[in-house]
Length: 81
Image 1 (spheres, rainbow, N blue to C red):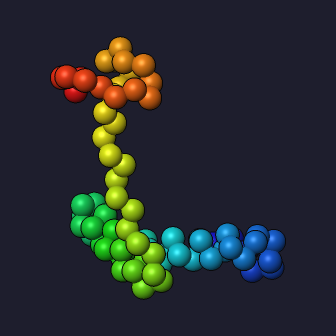
Image 2 (image 1 turned 180 degrees about the vertical axis):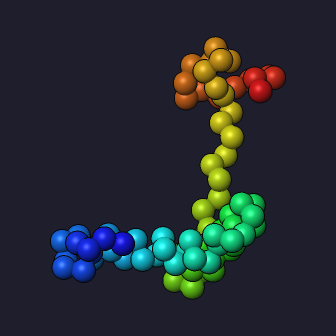
């Protein structure tokens, strides 16, 4: 990426990130945006599974929001959302 990359000025971890980003770009640069995102997401899922990480579900929708007028930390009643 830069000439400084070859003489060890940048940390190894940073160089590895640059190499990874370059490899991802090579894989998807010719694809339409939506397909590129799908390919990247699939590879991420495959990689996390390969190393034993589990998918993290999206956080649950909060039961109350500031606009309801209910104090934070208390449970909403009725038709809050």
